Image 1 (spheres, rainbow, N blue to C red):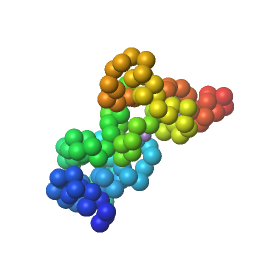
Image 2 (tube, rainbow, N blue to C red):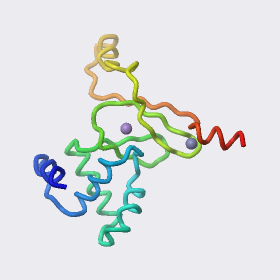
Image 3 (cartoon, protein in one colour):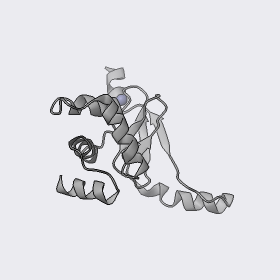
Length: 140
Ligand code: ZN
Ligand code: MN
């Protein structure tokens, strides 16, 4: 939590127990939770937290570049403490969102910039499919 306090202050954010809890949760998950999911998990140990606070906090984290927001098309934003550009894969059956951790996409922005003469600001690469667990369930 010391580290997180420091990070919040460095980014001009006041340190509050709610902000610490939310960032800590995001830092320790690779599940890309929505605001609702974050709220439901945190309210168990932090009864004073509200969904509105979670939304507000995520907004300020986003503006400060501490989290990235991911829109996978299910009308509910997901949040990721990994802000370095990376690709995602989404299961259209159970809704899980995972990172794609291999390097075929390295420098994809540079390549796009080269071909289009655009200055690329960010990129979002999302694949959709069925996860191994959902495929297994369908076959059972
Ligand atoms: Zn699935
Ligand atoms: Mn991610």
